[in-house]
Length: 134
Image 1 (tube, rainbow, N blue to C red):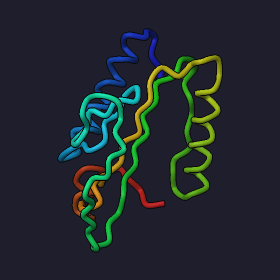
Image 2: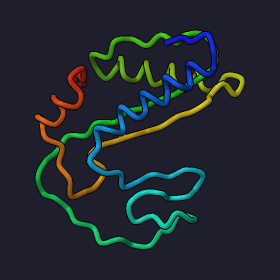
Image 3: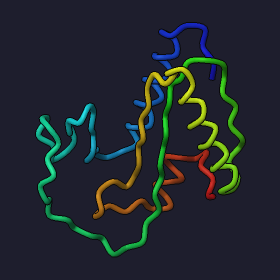
Image 4: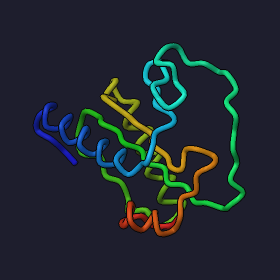
């Protein structure tokens, strides 16, 4: 999406990020500038202490969302139908963010985040109705 002002672009980006984050029951990892603000985080420098890990043996799917805000013309991505389309989109994204320090913001969100959580097929359909399997 292309915007005529930085303020409009920032507003749209923040709204999109909030919409994606609202799909999660909880955030375990929330890091900014090397500081962990997520569950178990101290709000200070990142700690590498071992946390007890619970593993759920049930198979699950994962959804990864990448949000970026860049300066410049509208970037065109292909419709993602297969792994080749996904690779092309990620390559285009990587190339565009390298141009003249145009990257303004980026977030990578994934679910499930906790190794004990399971993302069901129903959860995916409800939260990501436009998602396609690749």
